[in-house]
Amino acid sequence: MRINKLLSNYGICSRTGANKLIEENRIIVNGELCTPGQWVEQEDNILLDNKNIIEKDKIYIALNKPVGITCTAEKTVTSNIIDFMNYPEYIFPVGRLDKSSQGLILMTNDGELANNILESKNEHEKEYVVTVNKSYDNSFIEGMSKGVQICGINTRPCKVFRISEDTFRIILTQGLNKQIRRMSKTFGYTVVRLERVRIVEIKVDGIESGTWRYLTIGEVIGLRNS
Image (tube, rainbow, N blue to C red; front, side, top):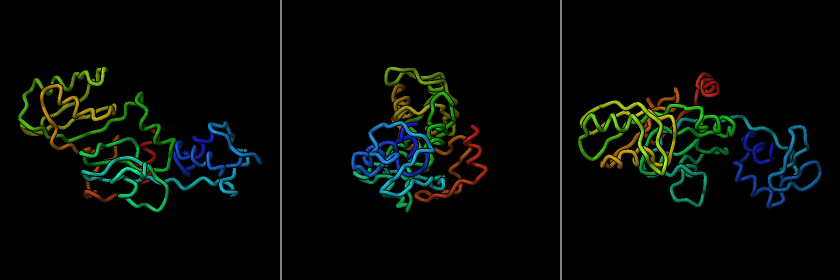
C-alpha cells in the first residue's frame, strides 16, 4: 500500500498529513528518504524521526457536536472540531456534519474503519431529526422519500417520518454535502434545526451536547461488520 494509507491505518496521521512528513524529510524507508506516494510493505523498515513506526492503539469516540463547530482536522479553520475536543492523541472526524448542524459525529484514528463507514456503496444508515421554517404536507414527505435532484444528481430514495407539523425524521444512506438542507430547499423549505441522532447502530442518546464517550467493543465490531 502507499505510505499515506499505512500511516493512516496505523493511526499516526492523516493521508494528507503524511505528505507533509514526507516533504519535511522525516520518513525513511529501508534507509532512504521516502518519496510522495511511495509504495511500501508492512515488513519494510520505516522510520519516523529516526524511530520505528508503531501502530497506535485504535480510538473510537462518539461526540455530540454542538452548533458552531466545523468538522475538519484542518487546524487553521476557526472553531475546528480538533481544537474543540482537545484530545491528546491524533484523531479525525468520520465524514462531516456542517457547522450549522448538531448531533452525532464519530471520531477515530482508524483510517480503514472510517473509509468503510464513508464508502457510499455500503449504504450505511444515518438518521436525523429536522425542523423546517413552516408546516409541510404529505407531498413533501413523499417527494423527499423518492429522491431529489441536487448538485446535478438524484439522491437515493430514503425514509421520512412525520414528527410534528414542522419537524420530521429522515434516514439517509448517502452523505452529500448539506444534502438535507438542499433537498428541503428544493420544495421551498428552509432547515432551521438539524440534528444527527444515529450512525448505523450508534445513537446520540445519553451524550449531552458538547460531550463524548468511547464506543464499546460491541459497537466497534458492529461497525466493522456493517
